[in-house]
Amino acid sequence: MDRAEKQQLVSDLHQTFQDVSTVVVTRPNGLTVAEVNDLRRQMYDAGARYKVAKNTLARLALDGTQFEGLLPMMEGQTALAWSDDPVSAAKTVVEYANKNKKLEILGGAYGEKVLDASGVEELAKTPSLDESRATIVGLLQTPAQRVVTVTQAPASQIARVLQAYADKDEAA
Image 1 (cartoon, rainbow, N blue to C red):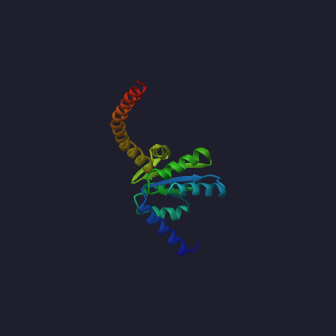
Image 2: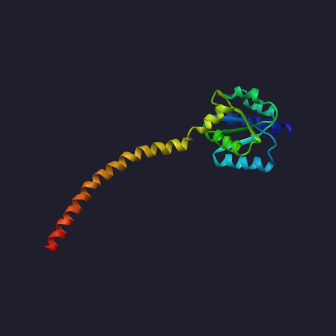
Image 3: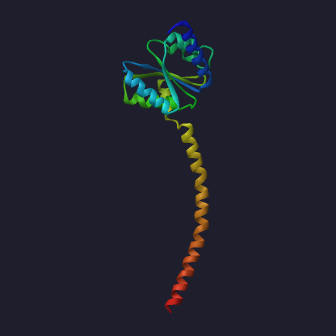
């Protein structure tokens, strides 16, 4: 990678870190290329991204963003995961780390709040934005369904009573 490509990478990462809400720092100890590609695919499917970058370049990209608190974690082999959704990057990384012990979670940041590994795991337990929306919609729909059921019940009961009287009159 020549100097211009490095500058472009730093610029792109810097812009990305200004736009996202969550960044997770991992150490991919001994992950194979196939395992990293599998993690990247899972991250992409969840609406997140995963990148192995040289620490020097990652530090330059993080500098001047809300994630500057992550700079001390940029030691040794590291990789960064990020997402617009506050939960999806953390959730995907934690799920993958639980299945593959070679991936170590060093920490992360949610906005300007720096999280340790346990903080990232707690963040991963919270429902995602889509899950929260589905819960709210479900809660809003439940009362409406109950109203429809209650209003339909008397009508159906009256119809059954009238049908019973009609059947009784026919039998007599």
